[in-house]
Image 1 (cartoon, rainbow, N blue to C red):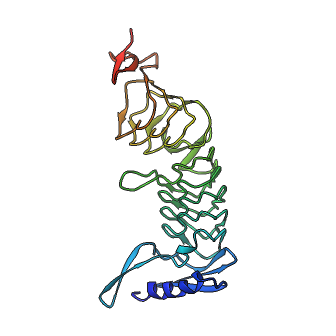
Image 2: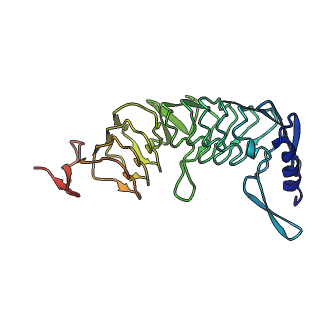
Image 3: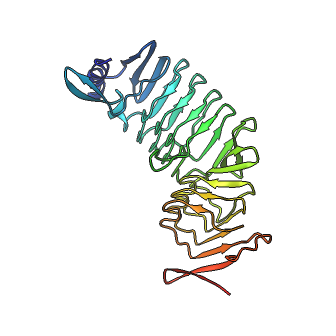
Length: 312
């Protein structure tokens, strides 16, 4: 194990200096995953998991060595990635900031797409997530060029992110206008292109696409939580109407929604996380828009000289 990273780095140095059709191998227990780079196309084949390598530190002869994926320095050259059947995971940070990447083929053998696997891939406008994928980790496609995405029925977990966990799987995709979900998925649902996690009759609003162009959004009844960074970086939304069922607004939920000026709550104000409305232009709040809500705080509030002032 101690020698794996050094062998990979040595092999990669050959590829990095202009040779193509070189084979790069990674061995992890019974797993053998190898890669071939030819004319900007990276083909990954083998059996088992892609070894977690990016930024990993290994010890060799008393010295620490930082290990990166063998194709790490080819991020501006690789335009297409073909992952062949048999590979079961896409490692964390495997293709982060591959700025020229515009095509990815993922086989049905893949069950896991790792942290930040395709984050920052600005030229990647579409992706086919196949049936068989179970887990999509934080930042997997964050800040990428995706315009729409479809979640298959097999997916059991999509990371919503957090201050310690990092971005949600689809955060800050500025061109993403819609997230669709298979009607056979037991865990997730799409309503008007917005991604929700469902538990019985309750809904967690996971991701409002950053490129969705609606100026007014009304969240459905039953939403109890808005996830970390759920609306972040959407520059189109002007007004959001939130149901009385809402209990929690996650940190950074509406951060950098620079067109946002108005929020209405069906009931009282939900518990609000850190910087939930950071860098917005929020100047108007309505509390108790649900006619059945009769709390003392019911009414319309305007932001005047830094204070929220209730209007008569």
